[in-house]
Image 1 (tube, rainbow, N blue to C red):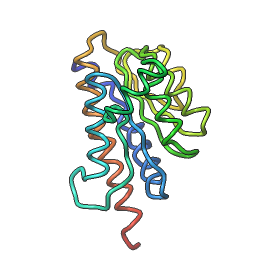
Image 2: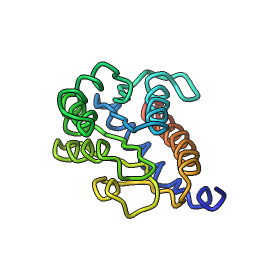
Image 3: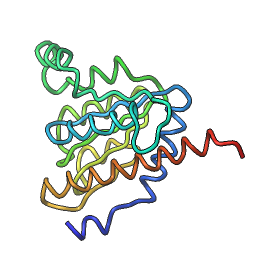
Length: 180
């Protein structure tokens, strides 16, 4: 764990926070997705943006696509499990929006399909994944890859990354609204 934590690219997360603040502050939205533990982390991220991370601020548009139970089951039934996120990205996403795709393996077919649809639709795809190279990494505009063979370690680093991203987002939002 300590080596994966030492390699965490904080500057990358700060850039993501600034970009996300610009997109969401301009009326765009964040779509976050993942399976299992990554789904829980996608929900955690969107809750911090719609609610708040540390300090009070306006809410921003952020949807965890893994939280849409009826959509997941209907899409899975009608189109197959591989399309459960891709179909939602196509329906909710607009050019310029941001998609954050989480996959510890980087090989989840439904996460990869969503990243492909997002890129085709003019959205920015940011990935939180495990060791690269992997199929998700190849489909992202930018990715933070945790170099560990252990899923729990990758998930722990992803949670730290989410908190650093939220802190950077809040700092960028506050900088944009404070008078100079």
